[in-house]
Image (cartoon, rainbow, N blue to C red; front, top):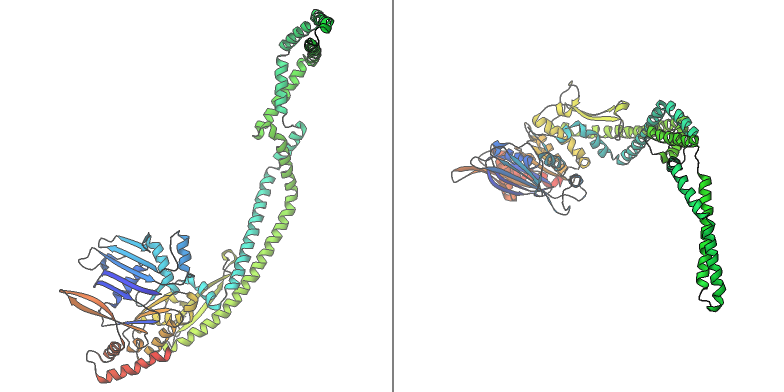
Length: 560
């Protein structure tokens, strides 16, 4: 609820700090005293368009602030969290607006600078003003469906519809993805079949490029390699080396018995040298046998290598990735052959999801119609006491075309009304204006306040052009509305309406240092009695008007 309103330099208000409590708060005062300035100030603090003409004459800027105390579960905190704002739900929420005389404005939430748009969004969740010239909220048809659902307690059905809708959309997206892939594969079918045949025929092997490249390099240098190997073979086949080694070994063996084993290590070394020379000779012979001087073999290796590289360039992969590419192309062809079956299955699942959504949405629509009948009857019951005998109200529920179905169901919901017999029903935003419209909104609010969860409602002169029993009916409904965990502020010229207030404020002009200023005073019981007596009798308060005020004030205890 609104806990405090601070106003600085707005029109006739120099400085004002008002503390509020819950329940029905009434504001009274002479015409022109400045009651509308309070509404303008509250509207500015909650996001209304800035207006430099409201800056008090002689001041550089105006400043208005509104402090709210809210439950931690209030929707405004989710909105602030989405904006990445720091806040503590256990603290009060403070909105502030500053407008300079040159028209420049700034907005703040808990002293953090914000855009005017965000301030307006937050304000729409906290305060709703109905009156002669300012009204929003229920006049926006986009809100009607959600309000009706809250009124009917349809949250569980709505959640079922939402989940069914999401499942349908997921199935549709899955089907579209497969369908798109299938269409693309079909467009590439000839290319895929040719590529698979070509790759199968070529039979690429991972690592083949490097092997072919090494073989080609060896073949290109085969003559030089052969010349070198033949030189090695000739040198190793020289008998003199073998004879010399064997002669040395025999000589050492002949004297080894005199050396007490000192020469054995040399003899073993000579053995290893002769064995290594034999192994080297055998390997060189193998190398010579492996040498391929056939130009046709070299040509075949080069042709395979160049074809392998060309195939890799064609498919924009490396040569080693060609075998994997063949597998991938094969899978895509296989998918193409089975894609039709998968698409049929997915289309079936999609249609099942659609029917499940439709079933849930139709159940929600049926529940909405029942809730609408209940709401229509409740609102119509409120109209005659509010001097709206010829008015009518109806909740219109229109089934949307399938292209407009959504997570909220199949329906478009609009609250329609007519204030005169024979006048066609129209959205409530288009019916009569002024006090008549405000009373109509009061009839709605009495039934919808709990569903909308807006903590503070403001009615500006909802009693315009009425009196007597009708004014008492208005006051009673305002009090009933305030009893629904909802704070109500009303500006009134009606003593009957004023008598129902839980808190009474008088707005009056005073002169200070040659300046006319507006002041607001919260009245105690005695002051309140005098104010209501003034409203009944005019400038001169009589004993009779005081007695009538006492009688009216009894109404207050009857509804609380």
